[in-house]
Length: 450
Image (cartoon, rainbow, N blue to C red; front, top):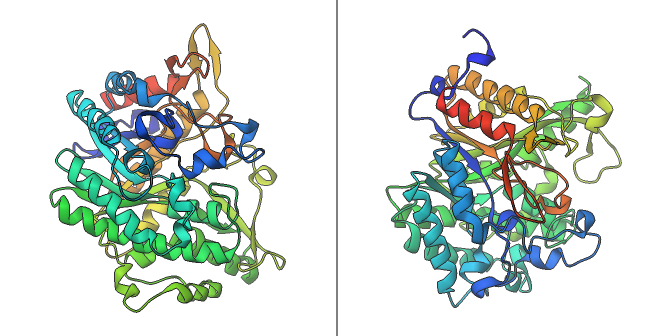
């Protein structure tokens, strides 16, 4: 190759899947329209001080009503695959029991519109928006959530399985359990290991059971799940920092993928994880195995770790990216393209994963708008550099077969509200007007070979 400038989508081969990702809670809005029940995020955003600027997702990008326009943009940009999630509380408002026909009809229309436009729908079943009615019963800390989730998966598989060829059971379980049930900074806002450990184990069980249901109901589909991951490196070569980095890696990168592969929890590296045994019943070792067709790798950055005597459980701390580099995003994440290469190689080394997709990668930067154009050169460079690292991994034999940009439109970015902009399409919060950014134009040209 004559340099990164010449890298095009065609370099990856005809079967490589290119796409863009989104999530229901972050984009749909219409939070109680047409029979939808409240989710834990609808409730969490009502608590003052939990979300930047007290933002909420009641309207978000109004994707619920404007999806035909957004799908037209996807088509215009020559993006062949669109990953989105279903809102559990839109389909089963109470979490269990009565199914909402208007919710099913909405997703029918969305999926059908994708197919009519030549866009392949990739569906995530759980992207963090648990029905609030189930949180009142303990949410992910209640083992019954496995059966609640299984019933929801069955409804979706039966209704949409004839048209969906790629399913993701869960999105980043480490994040929704860690931030939501240990740190309390995400919905539902619980804290402590007494909430975290049962939430972890029940999520692992639910992910595996959801995968079994999908594979049985949709035998011709690919079934996977997505995992957040960051390249972890020690601050120094000391044995203290090295051991601390290994513990953080086990917790952030290995806690969910390894039990899904039949390897159990990484207790040896993080001894406190033995507390998970309290929530395990006979036979759970086998029930945790998900038999996934693929793993969705979601990488944005790397983390540098140092030993910390005062940090409970892991005795490690993350070194603030601002202290070590100027090349950071609006999320205070280091821009470090080799991170995605190393994480792909790490996941590729696991036996039992037939295929990898990068199901999220992108960056939030301050955009510059002039004369109706949104200039985001830093995002373009980020995408170019990370995609080049994906290509490097693929050239070396890594079984990575797809790449999805996060995200289509600027949206509700959880606790950060609308401050960080990840989209390749700008959304005006007042008018809901869409403007394709320079990065969106670049991605469309990249996919078209221009």
